[in-house]
Image: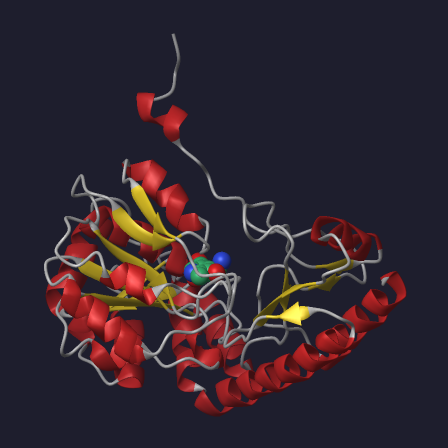
Length: 354
Ligand code: PMP
């Protein structure tokens, strides 16, 4: 006798990186932006907080979707928004991947995809990354003509930071014309090319982005998807069967302000990218092998030091990075790019440990 629905036993919930309240912590474990959001975001939220919180928000988030449509050069009917891109991903898996066939994923990728698969009874079919932890495009292409539920690829991949060229994504979209190719672009602004440019030509391509990383709004929970109107309609059907108001009033206005402040966005993005390039070289000087990253984090291993132990030693010295106790990547650390002062502190502490 159990109170829970039968499918709960099969769930595999995702464990997010920790958010500890420790004074003076250098927090480089969840790929947040080290800078605050644009001051315009705060002004917009403050104004909205004084006007109308007793009223429900616009369930269709029209002003935000218009701002995103302008930003991406698409029609408003091609934009879907949700409570963080995790929610957009979960709704998309429900809408597009429940065909009773396997869903193609890289074996080394964002762990949340498997959690959503378990929720919906979708069977993932993992395609191994190569020895350099690069997505094996030939192996994905070899699935052409096979019955699959769809394909999910983050670009850049997480937690490696390695980006794919758009030509490869376009080939994959063509090879499975009956199924959706979902490209998760959580980190695209830090150096990769966006597949939004391909949406017009491919009715099976869905591109998911977030305000959590390059727009410094992880705390506000805003994500979106860009695709042709039929895909956006499908997402809206699922959303309106689950939660008609996923974005509150403050999130809607805050995200609009962040999207519209392009100059602020570029300045902070450039600072993060500049810091990443410096940190990569300095980690190499300390003996680390570092993967080439187009994201706001680096994935690095030290040939002479166990990664789990290093993560623990860093934590004892108030520097938090992410370690995944998983096959193939358990000797790596994922290090989010901080401010120059935070990166400097990381390097000092690492030098003392090594
Ligand atoms: N996709 C990837 C690849 C991520 O790493 C993350 C952040 N953990 C997300 C999506 C979700 O981000 P959010 O829900 O904050 O938009």
